[in-house]
Image (cartoon, rainbow, N blue to C red; front, side, top):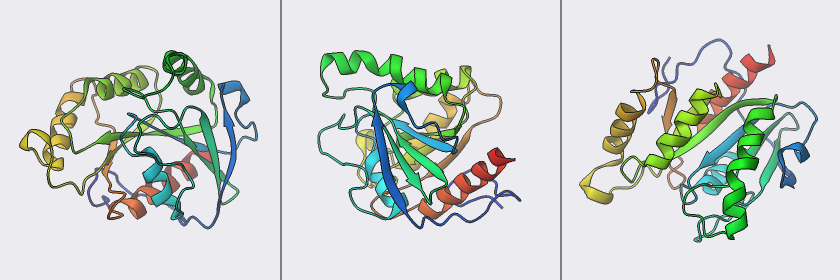
Length: 219
């Protein structure tokens, strides 16, 4: 079965995707300071205004689990949230035009990439892409870097409820354009799914996808 609004095939590894409880564990300024308890984790990554915190809050169905702000770049640390006492959601600093101190902007690349390259418990990256705007070079560059380093990822297209979008294109058209560009560097297109933190579009489907990846990783 292919999940609606995606290219994700659900198979035998799909399991219980319900989130019963979530708790904030810690914030880390360095990859080596992250939890070391060997629980699997999903990293959430994207541009500073793509809606990372909003997506996390929708997934766990609790307001303000992750801080949201009208000012891009609110997250400046690696934040671990423990779900069902069994696995982590990891909120990573946004990239792009974050209005953060210069030192924080300069450090983003080194400590975030250090996390990716040294995190054995990482099941996959949820790379958030804003579907309300045309494809952005910085998103394509990030996706290509993850691909070159063999880091598994899922494209999570956000803001798919938007009707008025820039340059007259609808979200599904921007998604198509992004897929065409990213397809130039991938023989097989990575998993992707459409979401909206406003309407809840894609929430249950994304959690089911994550359960499948997590169960496969556990084998």
